[in-house]
Amino acid sequence: MRVAAIQMNSGSDVAANLQLAGRLLRDAADDGCVLAVLPENFALMGERGRDKAKVAEEPGEGPIQTFLSEVSQRLGLWIVAGSMPLVSPEIEANRVYGACPVYDAGGNARTVYRKIHLFDVDLVDQQESYRESRSMYPGDEVVTVDTPCGRIGLTICYDVRFPELFRQLVDAGATVFTVPAAFTATTGEVHWHALLRARAIENLAYVIAPGQYGEHPDRRSTYGHSLIIDPWGSILAEVADGNCHVVADIDPELPIKIRSEFPALANRRL
Image (cartoon, rainbow, N blue to C red; front, side):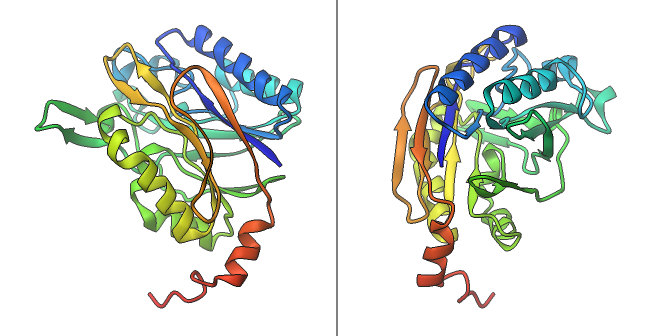
């Protein structure tokens, strides 16, 4: 099964971002992919975090979700839609869910994951500060979805630092993890590859991790380096920067085979 990680430099113009995403998804479909994963905030990287509330949609309604449904149906492509703003219980306070909807090749919405771990950190002696909780509301549900490529465990960006989430996804049957991200350049240089390879190795699962790259309207610089990793921790494909896609062929049976031959997960005692 050929899969794609879509890398983007999204900005504050939703229509332009959707146009770019549509082109890159078409390229992935033309490359023979059955499934493509968009990056975090693919539809909007605004000047302020609370700009998300202006374009937040109800589940199943709105132009971003209509775009995803129409494109997946037209291309015959499963789409794991990175993240986009969905309304939350505190939408009046300009707080939204960072949500990852999944569409099958017929354009049907299969599920949606809401980002659990919000990025509230200070970096580089507090020269970089991020407070996602000011504009986002945390999800609380662990979500998997069955696809032609295997059962996918859905995560978003900062989630990658919380291995207990990935263990729960494995216990729910996941053999593939998707980690759409807008990873900062500062942390990406030192942690991106290490964290993603660790999640693949310790869970004997594929990882598909598309990222944002370059400079954005909020002056954030994101790391790029979208990649696909196999269950043994080998990087199958990677691209450093550029609006593009990277592809790899994955075997849905391989994680099951490796877990049988190397039963680290079965040997857990805690």
